[in-house]
Image 1 (cartoon, helix red, strand yellow):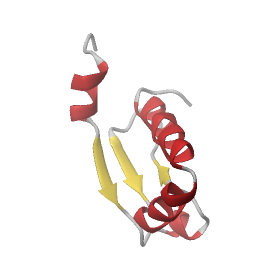
Image 2: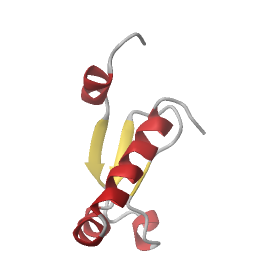
Image 3: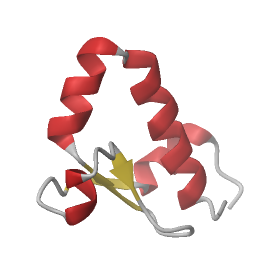
Length: 71
């Protein structure tokens, strides 16, 4: 894509999908490889962020790697 990370992040859409069944299982966020939409479980993310903010950052980086196509 030949863009830096700052530009790429403007191309990714984060949406609150707290009602999704995945959020009931304790997931913080999820996407499909190659999709630029990251679905966020905001209730769980907020809860975990209070206890382990580094884990939240790592989880979001993980999801961004999926948007780039990593399986």
